[in-house]
Amino acid sequence: MKILAFILSSCFLPGAADAASAKEKPRCLLVSSYHPGYAWSDGVEAGVRSTLKDTCELRQFNMDTKRHKDEAAKEKAGREAHELIERWKPDVVIAADDNAAKYLIVPYYKNKSLPIVFCGINWSAKTYGFPFRNVTGMVEVAPVRALLKAAAEISGGRKALYIGADTLSEKKNLKWTQKAAAKQGITLDKRLVTNSAAWLKAYLRGQKDYAFVVIGSHAGIKDWDDERMREQVLAKSRVLSVSVMNWMMPVTMLGMTKIPAEQGEWAASVALEILKGHKASEFPVLTNRQWELWQNQRLLEKVGITLPERLKRKAKRVINLE
Figure 1 (cartoon, rainbow, N blue to C red):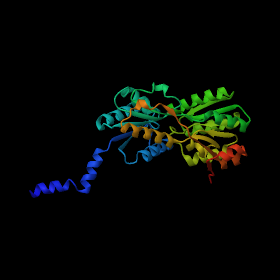
Figure 2 (figure 1 turned 90 degrees about the vertical axis):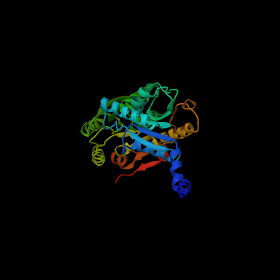
Figure 3 (figure 1 turned 90 degrees about the horizontal axis):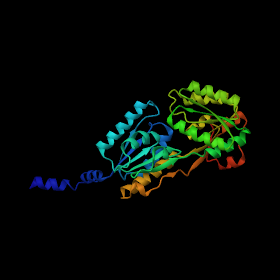
Figure 4 (figure 1 turned 180 degrees about the horizontal axis):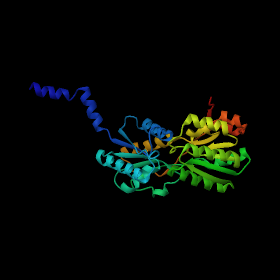
């Protein structure tokens, strides 16, 4: 009887109740295409975590495909994410950015029972055939047209150079930037590079032969050093530079940028609705609605460029790098 009483009483101890409650929580898995420390991914993750809070047991799998870019590594990362899903059996998956879509969702979960919410797919989900019956999400679209229009107005020219890393995401970014440039009568040349020396060589060319430079992401350039590149750009800049990526602002003068947390917050909100019993197919694929205006005052002053008052007034973030 004493043993039975102890067992019964232990069932009602606070620790036992908490453990039971934890086990009852639904399981949420965040699959990130990239790695911790990559600014975009960190922002998406922050949005997911701040929205989910403690409503589910959250795990994260990082595919790390910015640093490991060969096809075999990407396929292996997708396979490992699939194996984790089959082993852990989450109730809903949030898949962030293009490679999670290409190497996990499409080959393993097209029209399956597992609900998946994607976010951060660049420009169009049609590339992957989304939506599926079990898949919805938010597409990442940058305010490229507005940025190019402002750049042409400020620089007084319509010949530009795009510089970015030689990655899948940057190739997509370049494609859509080229389309937007063509519609505005802007000639846009390109340089997609794999190391910082090649990036600086392209940037120097941009100062001599172009009205302005469009700065893509450095993610995928393994030897990129923020401090060194910032110093080099400050010393060598002669023309306007623009970007749609806030983490590139230390080497860019004007930015109209997407907000990564918006992607994570929206994806997590839909995941919560799915956990309540809704189907992924009930939520249409959307594009982001928010963006921020940045200016790097030190670079602008160094080159002697003054932004129009309408841009200055709207600036939400100002960088003064010392």
